[in-house]
Image (cartoon, rainbow over all chains, first blue to last red; front, side, top):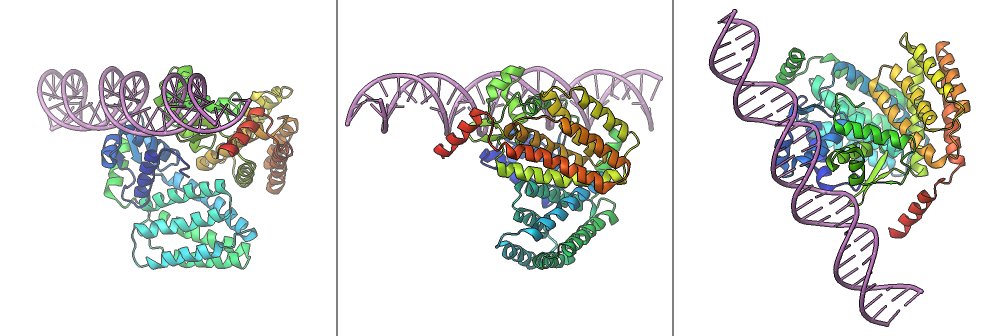
Length: 229
Length: 229
DNA sequence: TTTCCGTCAATCGTATACAATTTTGTTGCA
DNA sequence: TGCAACAAAATTGTATACGATTGACGGAAA
């Protein structure tokens, strides 16, 4: 992903992205170029380039002369992202049932074990790991373009969950991850797709049920935006 | 796409992207920040930001301390992009058969007419229009995220065609565009998907048959790279 | 008290400057 | 002639500077 790109820009980009996904930086939060730059000991030039990349991926939005903010996807946008995610991941399953590298199952099962290791806790790590399982699935297809898009929508889904979901409890999710692996290994594409659809539907459902943003600042900033514009 | 960013960066980005798609800037060509900046009368700061965006979309690659180049997708990468395009566009058809705005057919037919208007000529305009038909289809789904990804892969396919295809003659393509519209209007999802698959297959086939890059400079740069690294 | 307007601080948009790195050209030598 | 080493030019990576825009605060008028 970061190719052989400029070290500093990619470093800032990686850190900001991780902070957003792990909810250290919450949706709606401002990201002043000066502040971020001082924090990391780099100039605004670097931060700005990282922000451009983050905006392209939908994790950050910028308003002219106002600066960058962690994205707060609307419910419509969230719906669209989930739809695209479902489209892509269904096809990932189909491809994997057709062709999967030898080490694939080992990698997947190892990842699930990592997930089970942090199962009780409801922290940022489990959020990140849950997403990374799906990204790993996509990478195993060998199609890097597909994997990149899957990674993008999975990350944005993590952001959406942090906005709309009350709890990230992914207890059932981990179990479903195992079921997906089993179904792929059995070559039962349709069953695997069914589990994945159900899995994503559950994730999406948890987001939609808790329709209210759970942070006061998100609510306020939302109302504030309506007043302003 | 460019959001509310009426900035210089977006202007340079748009111009460069158009130039790449229309093959004014050919794959492998260098894009020195100075030169581009002088050409458009802006500083390197602006150009660099535009290049960052173009790289994120896969139209440009940059090598550290070496600068930016118009992307030269390998055949493997081209294959992957076509695969993702097929996945996305099939789903676009399915969605449109399910729901399509009233004005949809008018917009589509108007676009096909524009394509037929430039049918004889084999110039950059027809290349752009052919791609824009598919982007328009995606936009009609109402799913902006989906539309954005479709636009991205379509653009990259245009780049691939300019690398690997001997001729861009899209005579049959225009006709197939009409057939796709008809099938959608008739509500025959599977037939529409069949036509689209065949359509994309033909495009992909034209690219693969002419497996040799048709520009000497592309060949040389490829050999050059092998020697250096 | 409320509303309007002006000033001000904060922050961005852009250009430029300097350092670091790569590429190129040239010279000397085998 | 061919190769190696060194010097010069070109180009990128990063930081800083300055003008421009925005939003906030506060005072004055209705």
